[in-house]
Image (cartoon, rainbow, N blue to C red):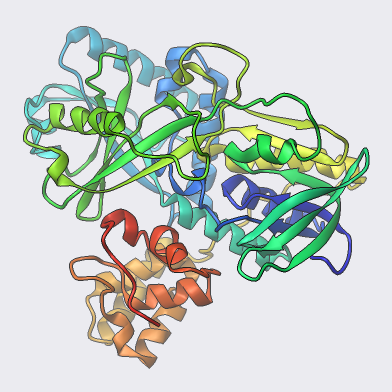
Length: 485
């Protein structure tokens, strides 16, 4: 990156930065991206792992955002069907009024999703609710609708890999120490956090896509006031069998705050979230407090009696980079994004949602391209994210290949869901070294080949990169460690 002036230098390796790098590189611009820690180490690896339209935003009459998110959900489902997968969402409704309100909201939701709907919502009987979620303490009538789930960190890594394949230069564990320029930002001094080496990277435009840290980077170039009000979202993972449900659920928080909590099956585990509280602490390591735990575990135990703190195996906390400017709870703040240039040469993007990252990147790169004098148009609606063949065909071929190696066909299918087209590389390594088919930890689905590919395919440098983001071992069971290399 330091060898010649770039067109664009992106600061921040979350989903928004990855999306900007991909969009810019696909238009023929020379692009560099630096991330202080690891790709998706911030908010993009600590979300609810849902690609959703935002049902709850309807209560704020934010129809534009919901329509935008539903459109982007359909695009991502097409571009990355192995990473973005439909799931049913059941919402128990124990009163006629609550059921009527859900029907009204979901009717609007269906209308906004016209032409790209995964399935229309419908009412479900109490006996259907019991079959879908046998552990519910008091099955009632309710409604069922559709959303999509994902692994947010894996989606970020795949977007980053596609950007790299199109010519973007990307580096994790590379921190911006200061911005370069006088009156106009013209680059950044970057330090390799693994070696301490410092380099000056110059670019015609700098993009600040650092999420909750955007004010910190912006403050390197100006004394303008901060624009963000970070909001903390906490998720809790429950041990296998403790929360007996076959489907994702959308249940009242139990705190009387009119908020809802997602309860989502994840392999043999279930996770639940999220909180939405204003945060003023250390951005790098937001804690999961006793109050946070009480909120999530309380919501789950209200729906599933007998579930308690002893059933928790892991937690994570992330920060939403919400735009400030108004008082009141952060839950009432808009999830819309904002793009601004201040000072010249530094373009900052803040706010937004995981679901809408592609459109956010498109709008930002449109602006950057105009400033750089290029008329190249956005292509990201049509660029696959790691899987170029039909999903069902890939799953069948991978299952057969695993069977030929004497492995459970599910191992082959897992490689498709993890690596897209590169499932073939995973199976090839399993054929060369059968020991790589062994689970990394007893009772968990991650195989040793996934750890190897995390390091050779996905730029995982530290054990934390592997455990927390590439394999998710740390959020399945916080006690897992990797064997010595």
